[in-house]
Image 1 (cartoon, rainbow, N blue to C red):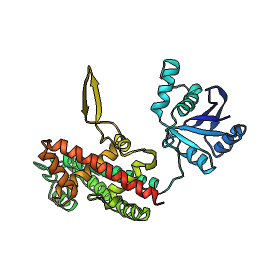
Image 2: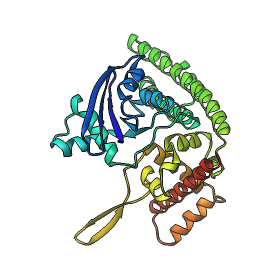
Image 3: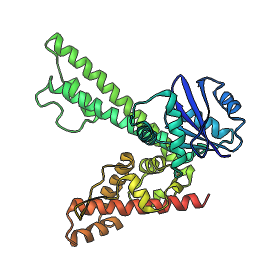
Image 4: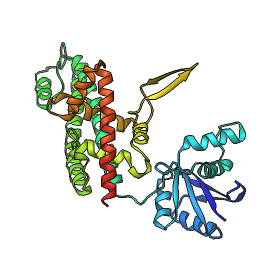
Length: 341
C-alpha cells in the first residue's frame, strides 16, 4: 500500500498526517522541532514501508526537515502553500489554517498533483541561489542608503547631490559643508554614517561578486555563453530556475518565468496579455539580458529586435518577444547542462 505523509512545518513543531491512495487517514503525529525530529518521524513512519513525504514550503519553513529526510534516502516532494490552501478550501469550504487538518491537506495535495517538484540534495544550484539573493539584497540595501543620503544632503545643500552617488564625490560634498546649527550638525553626522554604510555595502557586493564568479565557473554551466549573461545574471538564472528537468518544455519554463503571455477569453473573443505571474527575479534577469543585447548592434538579439520592429511591433512588444526568445535559449542551455552530468 502506497502511503503519503503530509507535513505542515512550523517553527516550534511539525504536524504530520499519513493517508493512503483513497485519502483515508492512517495516522497523525506532532513532533517538536529539535535534533530528534527526523528520528521521531522515521520511527513513527516505519510501518509504512512504501511511503513518500510531502512538505509544505520545502524551501521555506520546511527546508531543513526536507533536506534531512532526503539525506536519509527518503522521497520528498515540495507542496506550494497555495495548493494546500486550495485543498482546505475545497474540502471544508474554508481556507482558514488549522494545524489539525493542514498536514492532511498537504498530503491530499501531493496525492492529486503528481507533477510536484521533488526535493533533491543541495548542490551548486542552491549555492548560486544563495549568492544571487545575497547580491540582490545588498543592491537593494545600497539603493535605500543612497536615497537616504540624497535626502539628507538635500536638506544641507541647495540641490543636494545632483548625480548618482559616487563615494569620492559624496565625500567631497560632505567635506565642503559647514554646519551652522546643532540640527545641521546632526544631519551631517547622519550623512557620514550613511556614506559609511554605502562604502560597506560596496565592499560586500565586490566580495560577493568574486564568490559568484568562482561558483559559476565551478558549476560548468554554458549559460554564460549567451550574449549579455555575466556571472551575476548566470547565478540568478541557474539559482532561481532550480531543477530544469521539472519543466517538460520551453513553454512551461516561459510560463514559470513570466515571459509567456497569458490568454484571456470571453464571449468568443481571445486576447493575449502580458503575464505578471511567475518568478519575478527570473523575469528581471531575462529583462536585463534583453536590454543588454538591444544596446549592442552586433548581438543576435538586436537583430531579432530590429526584425520585430520592422514587422510593426512597438519597442515594448519587440522587447517582450526577445525576452521569450532568450528564455527559450536559457532553457536549452540548462537542459544541455543537465544532460551532460
